[in-house]
Length: 376
Image: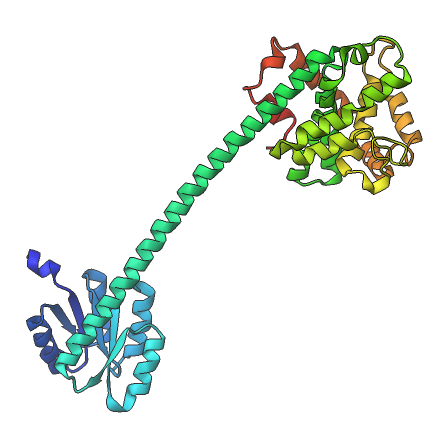
């Protein structure tokens, strides 16, 4: 029984039983197991019940022809080898059958040795096709596995990025406590405007990071200037303005913050060209920096300062409208005005809740920055 199961099984189909009886006996002597059927319909019924490795079918039969049988087998069991048997006058048709999926053809009357070799070639061809398919599936599984591993690794890297971002922001808070919470609010304001403009996810990430770290260069400003209570002298103002380039030089060396560093460099530019450090004008200024200008002014005017209390939202809105085309990009202003006032109030409450948490500055592992500032 084990030997029977190990032999290739061939289904012979011909309306002349004597034909497949002679071929079957030759196949049996050559190490094959076989079964004969006298019609295409009977062959299909047999294939439904038993396992075969190949089919040898006559082309011309009453009822279902060999070509029709080939078509049905291709639909149901495409892994089966198929050899078409035909008379000398139908060789062109047999070749056409090979174009439609047959693996070889035999010319009747059979040369028995040639028939055996034809079947072996057909079976070997199907074996190679199965091996290729198996290899393809293995490659697909490997690619899927590697893709999943890459996605996990990228998420870990993104998390590490945001830990770095949070740590840099915390370092700035330690230096400049008067503006604590400002960077987070401005980043969220920028994201609200940028989303309304229709920025891509990559643009949103860049804008979020650039706006969050816009003042990181103040780490390099002396305390005597950064923490001075009174008005800065012209010399001190020049020193303070260097924080833009200090921040840019710091971030541009970090690959994942390189694009954000351009916002840091341009965050003090004005739409009319009167800003610093490069005096850029209009769309020469990166979009993220033009969005930042509006968000920064909104937060500066609606937040408490040592020298004054927070101003009403309406006052900040009127100032932004007044400076449209001068300090601010008119298109960005229009988008800002299209957003409801509740948007900004909601953000202020979110940041206040975040800052009220114990040890919030050290909370770099809880995903807060990922959820609140960067884009998932």
